[in-house]
Every structure is written in C-alpha cells, then in structure tokens.
Image (cartoon, helix red, strand yellow):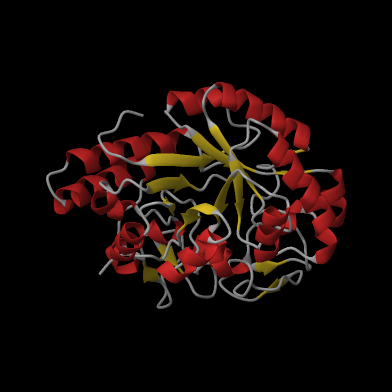
Length: 342
C-alpha cells in the first residue's frame, strides 16, 4: 500500500486471513481475539462476553492465536489481543488472569485492547508492561477522559465514530504523546455511540414476532438471528428505498423514503484530508470477517489515502473520495444522512 501521507493502519485479523495479505498491503499492526472451551461453556463468545469479535472471527484456543502471533512477529507485525467486553463479572476473573498471563508471556504479542476498569486494575496488579489500548467502548470524548485512562498506562485510545474532525484534531493536539485510532471503512451501519452498542439500544428477541421494520425476532439469546436489533434496522435501510413497516417491501407507497446506501456503511472517509498531517492518528479497519482485511477495503483505502496525499485542497479530495466510494462500493455519498455532513 504505497501512499503519500503519514497514516498508520491497524486491521482486525481472523483465522481465515493471511499474513501474506497483510504484507502485500503493508499492514504492520493487527488486533484479534480468542476463546476456549472453558470460556465458551460459561460465557459464549456469541454474546460478546469475552470480547466484541464474535464467532468465526475469534481464534478458538490460545494455542492457535499464539502460533499466529509468533508468525506475525517474525514479519514485524504487531499483534494486539482484544479483551474488550463492556464489562466483566467477578466469576470471569479467574479466566481473565490466565488470559493476561498468556498475553504477558508471549513475545509475539505487543499489547491488549480493553476498556473495563476492573480489568485495567487487574493489569496494574499483575504488573502488565505491554501496550494498553483503550477500546472505543470506553467513550473517551475529551481530554479529561484521556488523562484518566493514561493513569492506567494507556498508550493508545480508540475514538468514537461520532467525533468530528475538529474534535479529533483538538484531542490529538492536546496529547501528542498518545496514539489515537479512528475507524475508517467500517462495515457496520450503527449510528449509536460505540460505548452503548448492544447495551441500551437493542431490541429484545421474541420468536416469530415482527416488531419494527420487518425484523423477525428470535428467542432470547437465539444466536441464529443475525445482528443486534437496532443495527439490523439500519441494515434494512441499506437500500435506495425502504418502508418503516416492512424492509422487504418493493412497491412504491407513501411510506417509502429515498435514501443513500450510506446508512449501512459508516465510512468516515470524508475526514481523511483534514487529518492527513497528524502524526499520532492510526486508521482502524473494523474487520469482523467479510468486510475487514478483505482486498476490496484495503485497495479502496489505498486509493483514498493517495487521494488525500495528492489533493490540493479538501474540496478536491472530497470529489475524489466520492468517486472512489462509488467505484469500489457502488454507494452514492449523501451528506444529508452522513454523521459528519453539515
């Protein structure tokens, strides 16, 4: 990935991804998660009880993750392990202590991504010396929050998708000794604050009951029903036309609204030109499988970064970015429903 800017990039890594693809695209930092027989029996990974990675994109068993970390380390790729559930209960701390010890003792692992205050205290108690990244779930929106987490040894903080370019510029300038990550090319369409994702704004699932926008609910904890309720509402809006009563409707009625597909694609690409000269910003690709380190996203990002580095001004870059978005994702940008539009 040859670019003319200062951005660093981190992407999620899954068991189906390859180190060869990381090297091809000049990715030198990844994050991943794992679960094992003990955690799966007590706190199934599908519920986000261990990390926010979910099934299929987590390594099953510490040994597999450690083997990947060793291979990545040989290629100078930094590996971060996610232990970023919203919170952990007392019964989980025996498992967490073993996990932290694994991470401490594996030379191929650079650090950990977390946000739970109890786990941060545990890291201090266990004399954890590796890098600590504060997850976006921690909702660090201002300098006071950044200073708070730095007291726990945080070297890096992931900022919320809702932050504007000015807010990002202000917070990064105030903390030049801290690296900040911002999501880009996110596959999700959730417009809620990350720290509240799946916590306050999801619909309970009851089998065979339609409740909103054509969502058929499943039984509580029915993992066969994909997506959290609210996020699935937005996925239903991921088309040119939608109905408030039926996502699948395809006839024209007064309930239809013309919307861009942007609602299903929180891209953040419009801010890259304004942030391109900030040295302590890393771009984070939200890889939970099909939309993460896949070739389409990385190739698209390469084109965007080159556009940001070669454009004469922000207006020129925005024009190029919209063209790239249309060409790569067949999505027409609509600033009226963009989180960052005026």
